Length: 216
Image (cartoon, rainbow, N blue to C red; front, top):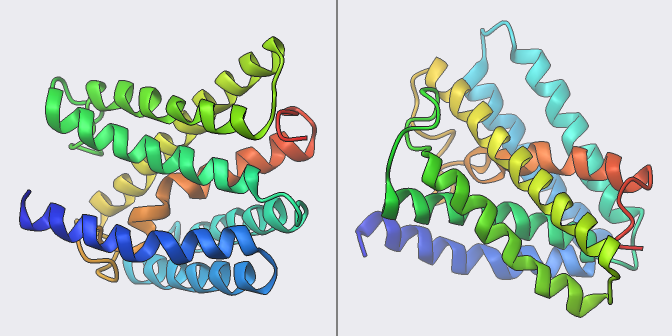
């Protein structure tokens, strides 16, 4: 294990428990957690995008994304499973892309994100689908709901990867490797939540409009 990967691993061990605690407990714990991440994301966006034409558009999108994240958890105060599920899908998508991309390598996916490969794309989908048994153990689903769950995971994984590419594009525009240095081995907050910034709004719109009913 390289020094950089060791930092990523140790940082994850420190970050994951309190994150899960705040998501599961909800209430003021979640609000405090989400507010801290929101302010950190705003600061990183300001630092990397000041004097750019898209500066204010980025702020508007961040406000919209975090508002959807807030509504998704608070509106389902007694049910943390949807928010936690989406979070895990995004994490597994990120891990799957990283592992498969490193191991299988292969053709690059897009020039704006040079570390993204087609093998990583496939790995992201495959690993994110491993969450299916977790959801089934929480709620018995019929065949139609299982199909709905499969497509929901594919959609969220795809959107998460799209978000990753979008943030990578803006980083390349300003010629930086990471959006910050707050998380050793990972970079900044935007580097870690890039996919979630897009996944939560899509999820909220789908769930609040009853397009997805697997969590009801």
